[in-house]
Image 1: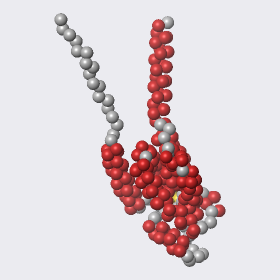
Image 2 (image 1 turned 135 degrees about the vertical axis):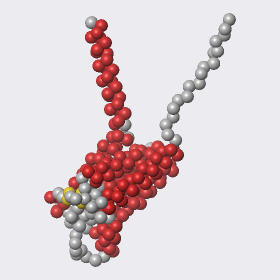
Image 3 (image 1 turned 90 degrees about the horizontal axis):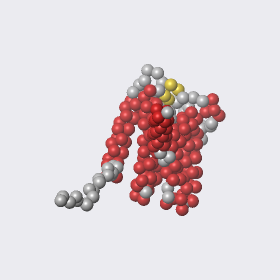
Image 4 (image 1 turned 30 degrees about the vertical axis):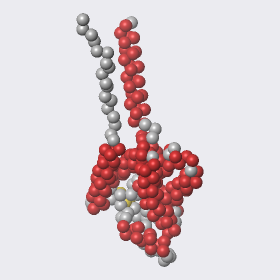
Length: 242
């Protein structure tokens, strides 16, 4: 009599990418992004589409907004560092959201070369804020502005802070993030770095990226499609039986 083994075979489940693999992919992406961005900046397009909106003419140039504009670099960098150290899952969500927006930005810049003609040629005042603004202008060409990456990444960072489990207990940080995000958005227009059009498109894309990364828009769409296929097959089987 042959005895059957009662030992259960161990089943190996496929795991997702490790943190190291994810970080490697993120680093590769950002180097590729920087390369593509500098290539776009160096290209002289045959036709440059000027982004303009009638409401832009009613927004004055206010040089003091260079402060929140430059604080953007600290805001984005410190938030990314915090989440990397304290909330790794949220860090990757923040990064993936940024990757979605920046990829769309590159595609738009490539397919629809664009620029601005909003910057003042003469400054009414001469102060430290104007000096800082001139430095920004010198290092950032008024091309490839649609959508505003400043706005998109600021909103993406705010989404991460709002969704953070740890920071829910820090109302001061959450309130500060809301205020700074708003000031950064305003700074892009008051410094004449972006049109209202750039800002609105960035807000729309940031919302779509949020739905995709945080609310699992893709997973829900696939699940809905599978339900429809199942319903179709069930109805077909019932019809065949009849």
